Image 1 (cartoon, rainbow, N blue to C red):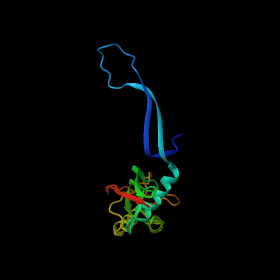
Image 2: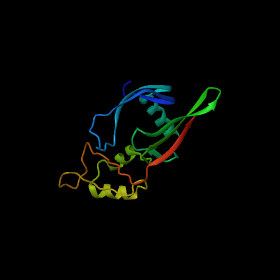
Image 3: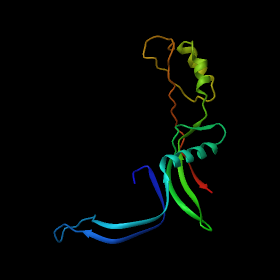
Image 4: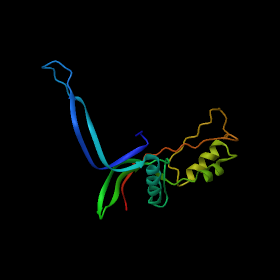
Length: 166
């Protein structure tokens, strides 16, 4: 198996365990190497499909006025919970950076064709912007005519939640 799969193990067994001890007597070694036969029963999930599913669930459950900073959600813990009659729930703990929803198109539309002072006043009035810094790279007092970037910096804690998929 390559790294694109995740195994939700229901049962893991080791057999034919052999330790490879290759050292002199009296020398302390914190780690032993060895070989064994591993047998695992469970369910195999594709990481990219699981990531997409978790991200969609995470987005749907966000409070109004919040959004994910990036499209990826980190899966911290994943396990099976027996529901009965051969059915299982996938229980996972996930985390993702959540920020207030920002309408970037609206802000850029307001800032276009203004000088830096006027753009600063517009940003001060905007309730979604707590602080701002405008850098042009030039010594002019004009906003760039065509392209400019808005960099979002957050200091809110990472939102964590446990998802129970039935």
